Image (cartoon, rainbow, N blue to C red):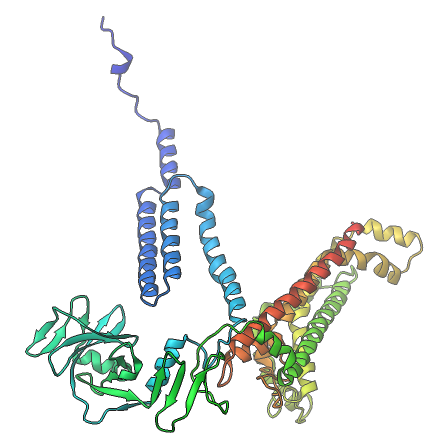
Length: 537
């Protein structure tokens, strides 16, 4: 008789159920395929973050570079760690929340207190360089510098060989620095470690960009810069403007006029003439002061503000009234074929709003629009070019776009009202109007009041309808900002920031903050008032 120890027995083979459970667990865990995908995706994210960090650090934005790399490293640590399941789910959302919401809001707030805009979109050093560059002229009989154009991380540099044989490298924002160990072809430097030399084809492909380059000879902009007409030789150019950093002045050597830095973000002459471009500075509350003090801005701003409130209120009121009326009609049990009519009612809501606005803009064309040609027998009605008709047209089109939403909301709210409440009112002798006014409408407001508030906030910033239908026109030519009769605050902000030959991002950001304060205040007050309706439940 043979005695065997329990440790010597072989484990029993897994059953079919155990094998199936193992396959399910492996599939749920993802196995090696999911791990490989995770490694590849996180590797790409980390590589992009490192590249972005290098680019940001080269431009001197060290804080942003550190934040980008730190967030990428944190993501890699979280997703390669065991556990931390909440962090794995929250990480993408938090990143997008910060980039698209928090950072955008904070940056808008910062810009509102600056003079950022056309002619003031960089720092003082960049403005000085731009001014000196704009007045550059080639020095007569300038010696020729042998040139090789280099590229590093998408940025071009000049590798030049001076007539005395010295080799230096520099870029648009980097003055020439002498280098050792350059690759030579005879007496000409043709390469440098860490850089790629451009071929003739590369130079031709980037000819305009290379021709616009101006590489300073030294840290003193008055010493001049090197420019090249052909990519093979560079010549010395000096500026007709002379900059005195200690005095903070820019002198035009041709006319003798002295422009001084008086704290307005631009070099200004004694007669008030400014040299452009200037530079970005913090101006405090000046943009908010301009919005309410300068008549050329205050008048249009107040008009746009009043029309914005009127437009938002009428849009909500008309859409709600028509939606409620149709909901009551289609909620009547005597109504036949309600499902088909309801489909037709929600069709305007099914199409994108900006496309519907474009279609209506074509139908309201003064010369060949459907309304004038067909419905009004060829009448010449300026639907979109007359101030009051344009406002009426906007309300009409927004009614077309908005009533289906209110119809659906009101239909659901009406159907949720208990029938026994209405029956009790009828027993007490109430007529249909009394039941609607005293029972249905208050109970309806309990459900739809928050939606009416959100609809008001949405129409307060209904950019696409205004811009696609009228473009904010007709234009107010007397205004100090680009604004029209049908502009609401958000379209006025867009025009101030992005439309026209000049842009004033600081003023536009100030308007944005004002809009935020108005909408937030109205929403808070309205939501507090709606709490009284909760007692009806």
